[in-house]
Image (cartoon, rainbow, N blue to C red; front, side, top):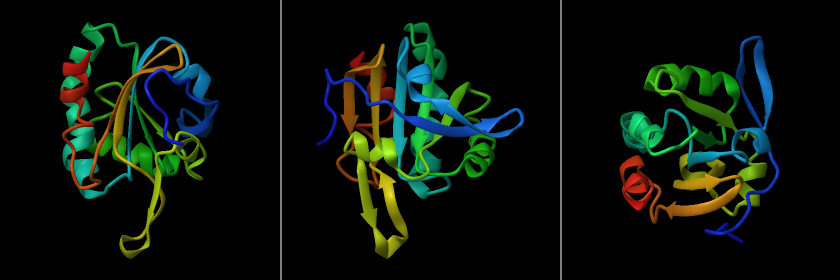
Length: 162
C-alpha cells in the first residue's frame, strides 16, 4: 500500500557517507523529528534525477528553510559511495541536502514507492515523489505519474503546496 497524507512514516535505517566512511542513520532521527522535506527518486546519475529533480531542490533549499523546514532529504536506492559523489556533482551537499541511501529498498518498499524495470536495469528502485513530513507524519505527498517527468514532485511544486 502506498503511503498517503496523514500516515506516519515507518521506522527505517538508511546509509550515508559519514566523516569516517559509510555509516547508518536512523530514519526516526532524520525524517521523524521536525519539519522535513523528503524526496525520492529512481537513482543517482540517472537522467531526470540528475538534470531536474535534485536541481529543483538545490534551487529551492533556501526558500524551504525560510518556510520553516528543518531538513531536506533525498532518499534513493543507492549505496553511500555513489551518493557521496553524486551529492558533490549535483551541488546537493553544498545546498545542505542530506543524501540517504536505502540500498535494499526496505524503506521504499515499506512506503509503497518501489518499482522494477528490468529492460533499463532498474531493479527495486524508487518512484519519483516529494513530501512534507512533520514529526514523522506525511502532511503533503506529491507522487509523479511518470518516472521520466519531474513536475509534480519538483521542489517548486512542493513549495507551492505549502
